[in-house]
Image (cartoon, rainbow, N blue to C red; front, top):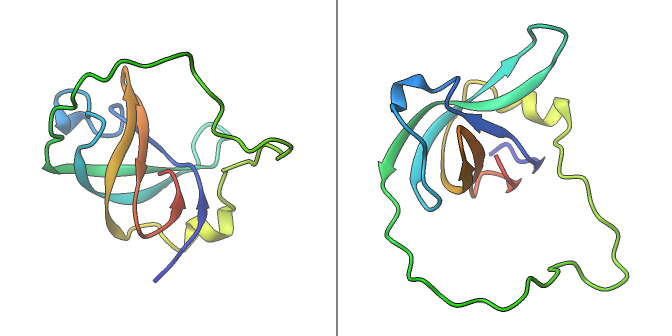
Length: 116
């Protein structure tokens, strides 16, 4: 199956049928679309459908934030290559909402490494 490394946007503007924000942990089905309007060339998850709502998370007290990056490692861009993304356009995938704030967020899936 096609595979890529990177981040891809998911937003309510392209998924107005949802009627409200997604929730971290939602299991979703979606298609990859490409937007070449207004001098941009981007990919995003569209036709998103919630298959299973997220289970409520327990509240866990946290200490100060700690970096997940290994000491001495360099930050890595997670932007996918356009050629890799083009192979996924129109494909139906499933994944989990990793984060969602306001009207946009990211989805992870076993179909790719990184976020979508």
